[in-house]
Length: 198
Image 1 (spheres, rainbow, N blue to C red):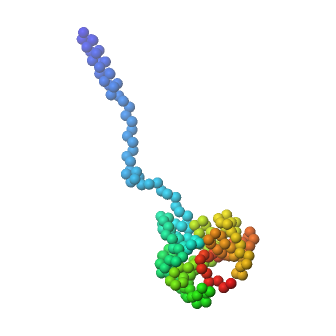
Image 2: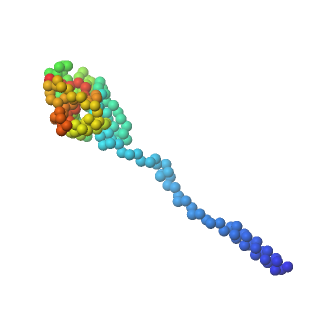
């Protein structure tokens, strides 16, 4: 009887140990709250629009460091455009002048060191001209682009009656090529009003 009691007690203790011997899974590493709430990084915007200036057929477009855009269309007040473009292009004020001999009457011009020239009349932004590499349209059209790159980005039409050189239109942007053949590159671009003497 005593043996049966001891055996029963041993079996009960063994069953209790087996029931409690569960594998302990390692605890999950602590979650860093900063990592948990930080969204995944987004790819960087193209260089020409990340915190920069883009040319376009309707005027200019400024992009902040996050890629948000602000349009400066033709018709925007002159001082607004000059202030915004100057801040975006390094803070150096443009050289400003007046040309009284344009066909549409006297115009004011603002020339920046990067080759961008802005045209104003009656206190409003009316056009731009670019003759140095650097600035581009959002789709990558800029001075120095090859004819092949220009054709790949836009539909290009040569102006056969131009008296100023190999002139073309590419959508809402116009310009000049160094040559009409496949070896030509973009020499300059413009949009809006100009003061060309044809």
